[in-house]
Image 1 (tube, helix red, strand yellow):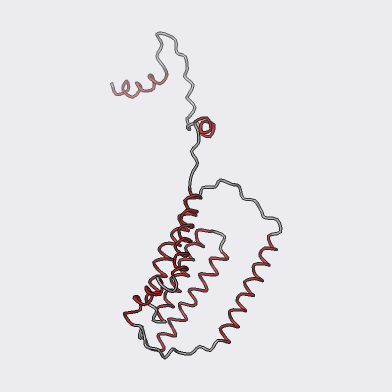
Image 2 (image 1 turned 135 degrees about the vertical axis):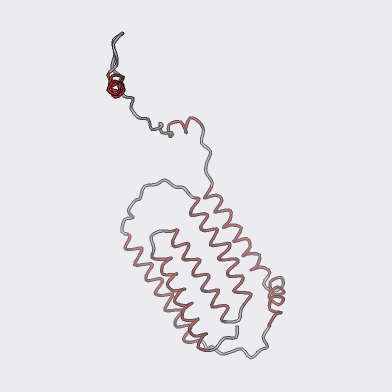
Amino acid sequence: MNLAEGVQIVSFGLLSLMAIGSALGVVLLANIVYSAFLLGGVFISIAGLYLLLNADFVATAQVLIYVGAVNVLILFAIMLVNKRQAFVTVQRAWIRRVSTAVVCSGLFSLLAVMVASTPWSFSTGAAAGNGAIVKIGKHFFTDFLLPFELASVLLLMALIGAVVLARRELLSDDMVAPLQQPALTLPERPRELVAVGTTPPEATIARLPSDQNS
């Protein structure tokens, strides 16, 4: 993608902020559905970074596989799972939060040191151009055939796991009957007993306007 240097810097900054903000939302939000949606935002922002690096095929694969397959699969698994369990407070939850913060800080420090110590130099080789997809396909089915097949098996395992989690067990009639609630009914209004040959009070009230008009 041939863009001006200023446009590239602004685009890189916006995509980076989008990725970092979405990632923080995935970790910090309590609602798991919102976290899954923000995970899609992380994937899309990373695809935009790939576009800035002229990696069109990788960006397209990022959107199709991660956003269109993995993230949608996660959303289906979350929305279809119907676990009716009461909320239980986790004992000593602060220990988990502190340990998670320590691990994430260590990984961030390690990545920061790696980025600072790596010599980022531009490649002087010829650009692949339109033949990049052909070259990537050849590498997928020759040099990287085993990782490619392992990735497909991993996606299949994720699909089977989502189906298993979303499956609902069939209940017999004996088990379903106690679970069914009776329909909501209004109590019947008590009726007054009227002697034979007398006029009910409702009929008398209804005939009053007609008698007055006559």
